[in-house]
Every structure is written in C-alpha cells, then in structure tokens.
Length: 127
Image (cartoon, rainbow, N blue to C red; front, side, top):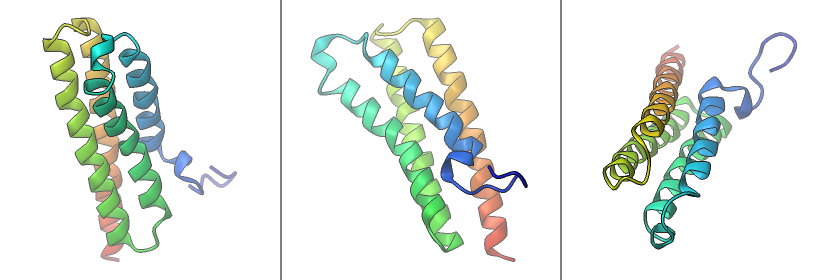
C-alpha cells in the first residue's frame, strides 16, 4: 500500500495476505502426510490452495470489474475445494483435531475476506 493507503499491488489485498498464510499452512501441514499421499491428496491440496491466491492475483490484474469478479469466484471455488480436502485429511487421521480447527479457522477468515472483495468489486461494477 502506498502512503495514501491506496491498494497498488495484489499483495496489498488482505484477502490475498490471509490466503497466502493459508498456502504456507497447507504446505507445512502436508509435509507430514504419508508418502503414499504425495501424488494424490498432498498434490490436490497444494494445487487448490495455490489456486486461491493465484486467482486473486490474476483477478486484481484484470481491467474490467466483471473479469475481476470471475477470477475471485474461481478463488472461492478453490477455497471450498481445500475445505473438503481438509475434512478428508482429518477423517483419515493425517491431521489432529486441533490442526483441523486452526486450518479451518484460516480457511473461514480467507473466505470471508474473499467474499467481501467480491462484494465490493461487484459494487464498483455498477457505478
């Protein structure tokens, strides 16, 4: 953010910042998964979580508001995919209940911020 508080880069978006925290959490978390999950659940989780911040960044870089919102919705879809996969990891006992809870909390925080970003961007598109 510049000195006037203006968002200049995608990294200035709080939704991206919280999503980035989530990416780091998932990468650290999946390091502990069984080796046989490397090319299945680990790979799926990592692709989906990276897709969240990648789509936020790509949306930020687009010119039209409708195009921006489209990418933000893709990010939201990836976020829901990660939520599903975290349930699977918990049910397979790859992660503890505490780890599940903290990860799910970060997912919810990111989701709320992303929903706010979508709402505010849609509002701008009708001005």
